[in-house]
Length: 99
Image 1 (cartoon, one colour):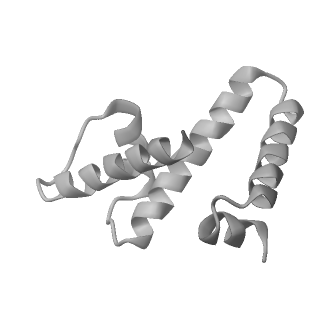
Image 2 (cartoon, helix red, strand yellow):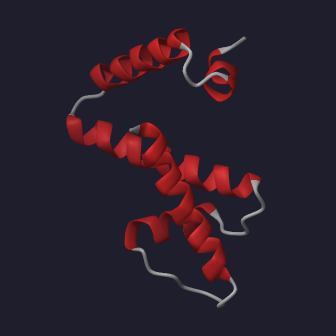
Image 3 (spheres, rainbow, N blue to C red):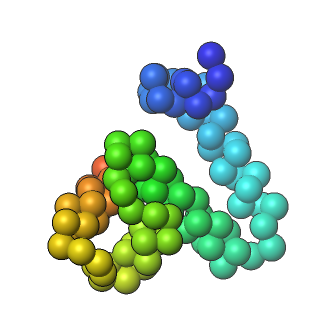
């Protein structure tokens, strides 16, 4: 079972979590600065949230999700409010599961 499958199907898997921690540590030391690392993690977060909600049928584009997460301002048609709320729910779920 590869690392991604282990994290999805067995999130408590010590092997998968250790591998993820090692990858995180390597990525952090490979980048030139804390700022660059923070920017990379923000980009990853935007992509993760966009793809997670898109799988469920959320119509928002990557650019819209990113703009919403950066500003928390909703633009567009009123029916997109639910789509933006879904994005917020995904962000909250990621934060809760990470802690």
